[in-house]
Length: 313
Image (cartoon, rainbow, N blue to C red; front, side, top):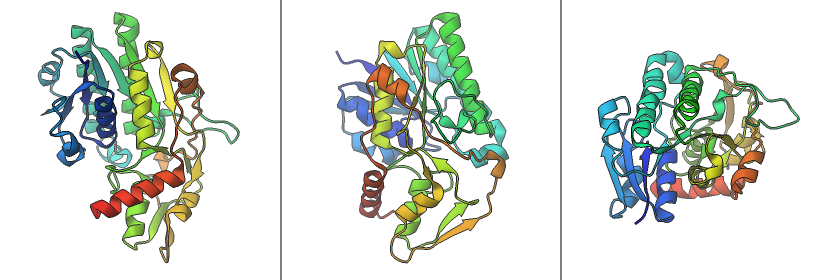
């Protein structure tokens, strides 16, 4: 009988791709999502798959979370509040979801002895220097309540590993983009720029645009998460994933802009939350999991543009 994976945040952007990767590998997938950030449209392609089910629910509801763990082999926890700017305006909601909600998931895993993968974020890291990428030993220095609550969730998860011997893996994927990502302020810069270019609107860059990001395509990210979730070597580990290359927001805008699309620099809403340089050192993911990204930035942008055109986004 196929193993069952519980995916919290299954209807979100990355959760959707993780769900697809698991189904493609023969897992039964039980999704859990409150649809505040994700949508049923994101998982509509799986609606007729007998190996997929999804339940509407909030991870802040401990009893409802616990009820999802019948006959579950692994839990991939992606449900989270992820808006950096909104976290500065409303830090309480991020704390309740990313810290309290994560503890509810952990406790359900402990009661059922279920392996947990916690999907974190690269935004917990301090600024990198110009010569190397960020590895898992790099100092952390969260610059927003979003990053702070995600780091707190990681610490609680690792306390369950050390204190209860619960099989836990913490993952820190770098900036991920691709189809099904929101193209609003809460979404990613690649999706926002691509949507604006298709609409003939000016691409707006916060600040001077010299800040850099390591941009990883959605299918590469999903494959990393599933590989780590099914590897015994990943238990008790914190693992980064990215391409190992970073690009400035200025260069990214030039790559995406077509025709007469303009590029404009605007004042940053929350400059204190900005990280100047994000570049992953993916060595550990390669050595531990045999994982490597396969989609270049140029190819990924082209795939996203094609999908947006087909969806008329």
